Amino acid sequence: MNEDTRIVHAGRHPSHFHGAVNTPVYRCSTILSESVAELKEKVRNKFDMVDYGRLGTPSTMDLEAAVAELEGGARAIATSSGLAAIAGCLTGLLAAGDHLLMTDSAYFPTRKFCDEVLARFGVETTYYDPLIGAGIADLMRENTKVVFTEAPGSLTFEMQDIPAIAEAAHAGGALVAMDNTWATPLFFKPFAHGVDVSIHAGTKYIVGHSDAMVGLIVCKTPELFTRIKTTTANFGYSLSGDDAFLALRGLRTMKVRLKHHQESALEIAKWLHARPDVARVLYPALPEDPGHAIWKRDFTGASGLMGVELAPAGDKNIPAMNAFLDALKLFGLGYSWGGFESLAIPATGAIQRTATTFQAEGPVVRLHVGLEDVDDLKADLESAFAAYRTAIG
Ligand SMILES: *Cc1c(COP(=O)(O)O)cnc(C)c1O
Image (cartoon, rainbow, N blue to C red):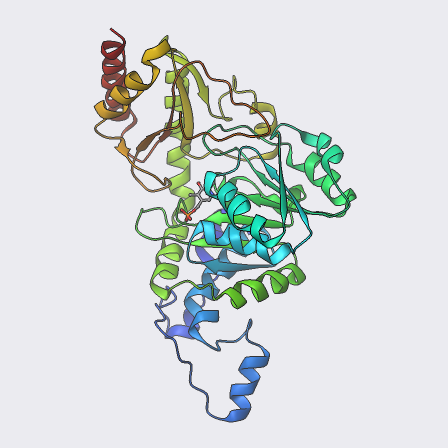
């Protein structure tokens, strides 16, 4: 089956629901049984049967099945946010005394989870250069159990050589986890490139409409699923039927939305790249991007999120960047991304590094290119550049 067909049919069972095209919203805590024997059978098969609202309902299970099928994993676990999926994956795979290798370009709340939670429970984190590739072998220790990757990196958009990192990690006895949110299950196939556990902030493109928080942990094997699901169940992680429904509804149109995001983002990236008031565009689909060769080798598409380093303005970097962002009218100022609408945030000041430094002379902003008309978006950016120049004086 082609992916365009799969995304329409995966995880859908109309015959289970009186022919309804979409799996209905299951709002439930209690699940009743006809007998004690049935009650006990559900407990024995609690990850496969509908046993209790917290552990999963048809709404969440169909979402999990659809995402796992699209990405090529064995099974998935739905959580209440992308960050909960990261926390569930790491706590499911690590124990006191273990060592974690974390990319220095990780999503900032991932770093906070390592530094402020895992550290308290005896897991040591070492941050590594996202561009390290096979050199990760030199950082592997006897107790390194997980190598965590994210490509492209949050805010800085470095590409990682996932197959090279995975080969070295596996040779050293570690599992490979990846935050695959940027590419979605459509544009990068982690399990075909050596990844064992893939994580998505479903909040972004899967939900796609900025109206729900959803996380997904997709596992390559049933064994990894059982291991991580056991932990997330112990922690009480769950996803509401309403939010699972919104994620499944968003998923059905994700491919057509992403095609549009990609086309507009590439056009805007090229337009930005050619401007004298832009120092650099951080977008691996752009041929001039340092990560382009890896992106082209491993990925089949690009989403609508990029970084832009504006022309250096010396000690006016920050006020001029703020003037640029304040002048935007169609690009909303706010966190998250992956919805239908364009967004912008300041990245300068938010980029946190410990293993490496991120060099930028000019201020860096992050743009999410939404589904608006691309010429309208360019006109909006044009007025922001005018404000930038005025602020520099
Ligand atoms: C947004 C984001 C997350 C966290 O997702 P939430 O649903 O907001 O918790 C994780 N990783 C990346 C790369 C993200 O952009």
